[in-house]
Image 1 (cartoon, rainbow, N blue to C red):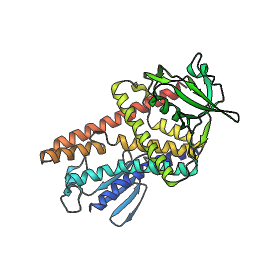
Image 2: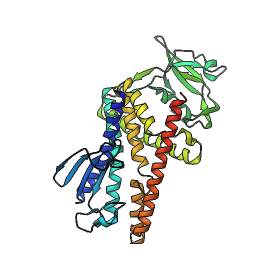
Image 3: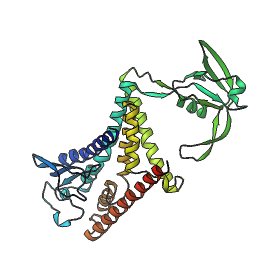
Length: 356
């Protein structure tokens, strides 16, 4: 059941991506000849198809992929290019860039909508409750003990654990920390210290802290107005986008080792686990994967949207399209790179599973 849920979630994300391309193409008058779910790689004929209007909607057995085939666009058969008014190739470079950007934008939009839904059904965050204090830390010296709930720092309300770090990092001098112990409120003065900490990318940094750790319990956020719901969704979308972009940056810098890269097996496995935990966790993971899909498609690899955007930017700057030979060779190289990455990440996934 978990694997089926994973396939449905990933298929929905891909459909939404292609739906973005489809709507933008139709807006500019481009004929969409086929909207396909699945990839015609090993089996080139769909197992089901239906034509509505000018578009054939098809389903291929090679799942976890999708495409929108527009008139006049075929990366591997350049003879299909067309200059008809309803052809993709007849459009101006900026119009083609908008069509290409529409897919990744649709993924970002979907993530935002998923976060809105999470906020409506009950968004959760780590509770600002102390689980432990470090030995001889400022918090321990000030008298903070396990199970104390931090409700404010410098008179700024604290509703979740992340608020603590943000306030401490931006503060100057000593802190006025308000805690709740049982039914009693206490005000404590704490002077933070600078200590080593690890980022989510395992980098060692110097960070201002007071020496406390959370219990790990969660609390439901009180989002009582539409503006609070939208702000939560916006903040989470920005956070997710930042995480994906920084992850790519750290991978290129070599901070994240290549053997930590995961592929489709990892995605299916984690999505299956998330579905077993609950709908909120599944939606949160789906939102993160959707952002990941949108950002990765913007990479300047010829087989991806980002690569095609680069071709169109070239045409805008130099007033001519790249030669067909260069376009074809770069596209083939792009697909070889993508397929190699798929094989490599799948190998990593299998090695990780075999290794427990």
